[in-house]
Image (cartoon, rainbow, N blue to C red; front, side, top):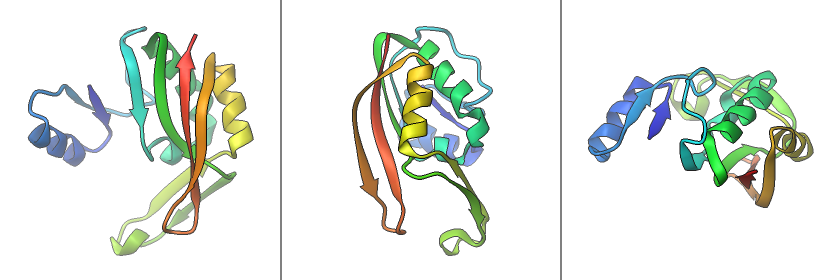
Length: 137
């Protein structure tokens, strides 16, 4: 099951994985069944969700996971919120909203997720992301 807010990304996913189940939706608003997934992966998406919504989203991820299910998430490594015009020369404005590692860890634990492994990974644009593997209770 793939979820993306971009219709174009859903179109590309369907073309590349014709047997997949894809939904064009906002991950903060989609209704998915509790305990529906053994694993969830979110790369470089949550950092574009307003950070005031992160705690609620982590709670949803915890509910969507089966007991002992895992989620691999890419979150912010530093506290920052802002925009960049003409992001990577694409002519679009990009928005980021993220907490630091300590705040993210507290929010994940508060959602009932156990931190298994993590690493801070620098990116080629001079920032860094926190890759974190969590497990549902």
